[in-house]
Amino acid sequence: MKKIFTISLLMALTVASFAQKPSAETIRKRFSLSTTLFNDFWMKMPDSTKARTINQGIDVYAIYNFPMDRAGHVFFFAGAGIGAHNLYTKSLIGIGKYNAYNKALITDPLVSYFYNAPSSVDGQSITVKNNKLSLTYVDIPFGFQYKAASKLHATLGFKVGWVLNDHTKYKGSDLEGSGNTVKLKSLNLPNIKNMHYGPYLTVGYKWFGLTAYYQVSSVYEKDLGPQIYPISVGITFCPF
Image (tube, rainbow, N blue to C red; front, side, top):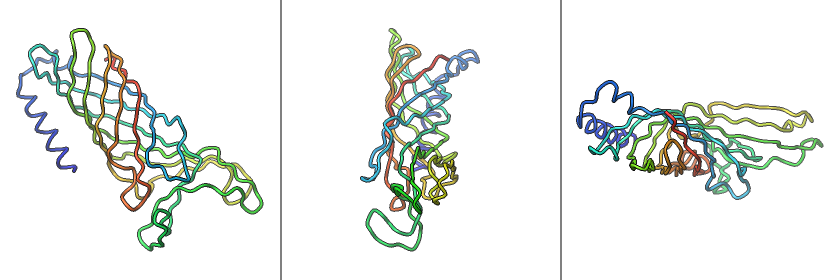
């Protein structure tokens, strides 16, 4: 899959680069910087758990546009940037030898799973204030954009990214039963896929747009965790 993305992108860039030789000023004008604020709607969450309604995330991309027609309405674009996705839930993420999905006991490798915290431990009441799964990717977006003379525009793109950081943050009662409120952060989570990918669509006017991204890949490796994935809907700003 990685080879297909890489070859496709390189071919498109090569074709576009030979289309014409722009001046230094033209090259500068073809660069743009976009910021997208979005909400993640998490799909295929385990039945016993659920995500918070609001799961805010952000993308920041630098884009270069290659014109594909003399009128300057159709462009191929490619770029790079950072994307951050978040899953907020009061459920916890465990690692163990018990596969909660097919009720089978396994020995290796360890499986990631969601579970609900007990109501009490050693007589101490347990309250989960929040638990967040955070995933940050280095992304390569590319695709096609149409810009009308009226300043309306539409983008059909695809992005592929590699994990830069993954962690969880827990805030709530000490699960060891001490009665204290604790904040815990876990890094380098097991069973997380090292890449994600999917198509996205943006429609807008001038520097503002509405966007939707459908992640084709799941967050966890197959058979090693819940096959959850986000559908992201948000607003894009491209003032530069």
